[in-house]
Image 1: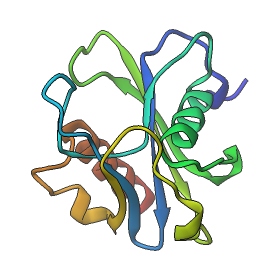
Image 2: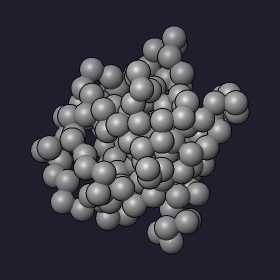
Image 3: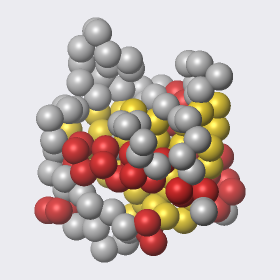
Length: 145
């Protein structure tokens, strides 16, 4: 069993898709009843049923941006404590996908828009989800990017 097949309890998973120096991002809906309204986010979300961490990230990526991803694209994975509740576990993945074409990305039912932005810019934006800024910074540092 690999770390991608972990079935221990966890709350959710996020994935950063890298193309060159850019990361694929989503602008969250501007609704006061959701966490981090109108902030830049990365694809991902909560676990459903007995999903593995990667299955959660892959399902959410498809729901949010209509992209099907293979595990072989993943270049980084970490399990961490949740930002809002340190007793929970969350998973963070980074995948490299140089040939992902813009026309293959379609916004789902959530979010205002999607955009590629320089990954290091995402990590310093005050209007990006803080926990993801921190997680992506650690991942890019670990990967030497």
